[in-house]
Length: 339
Image (tube, rainbow, N blue to C red; front, side, top):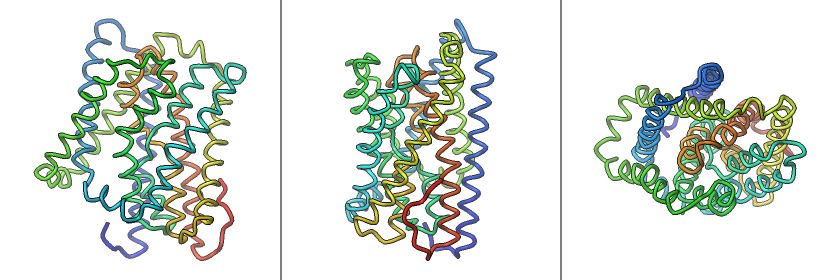
């Protein structure tokens, strides 16, 4: 990212957060529409094929956008980026496994599995970078950490799903073929064609952003349509939703404290502690929903995606407050950021 004066840089970051809020509203609208007007029958079959194409398009764009040099750069600061990966793919999954102890007494088993699934996902990219910028952290380090997390996630997330949820969701050889065709192949194609397509994507950034976010909204509508047909709102009570919100807030708080305290214990600079805090505490809805359509049975998608949507909204709200607090007082020592 080019060096920018502090005010323009923070203004850009806040615009990213504002667009993320609009994205959340679009996702909530998709859930509401699916709840009252779910797609059924032959139309559902057609939509399923459209979703397959949308997922392939998303991962193709991820491949085009991700600079291979950023992944190579991650090896230079292995301590920071290794810490982000460890938080994303080790600490979070442990919390997800612990959450299984709450089922079925506190939350339904299907939602507990959804909580575990969300803990296996990569970090966000745009919002992580934006929050690091607002908090006056190491923006360049955030770009590499968030991008590298998503690059690793294309391989690691399916492996973790197979290991920890395989028996539950029926992970099989067919699942591996679907991953290769719908996730890895488009991603690799995007990387191979990046040299020629990246300039066009950068020139038409708004168009590609609308299409990839529109694809995620479409996937959410499809997932919740299937969930409504299968009776998701008759299974998930208000009490379960409240418990899910509280559980998400507790997990996020635990990771925020662990990353901030862990960064201090590791001897990171304040700027790098902000990177670990913001990149390590996020879970990507934009990557998670498409991955769910590939990795999980259609009948479970609504239940599995719901915890991710709730956690994603909470992480945006909480991290926006934390980032602004750190950004307003960059020189004041903080023992641990709190929501």
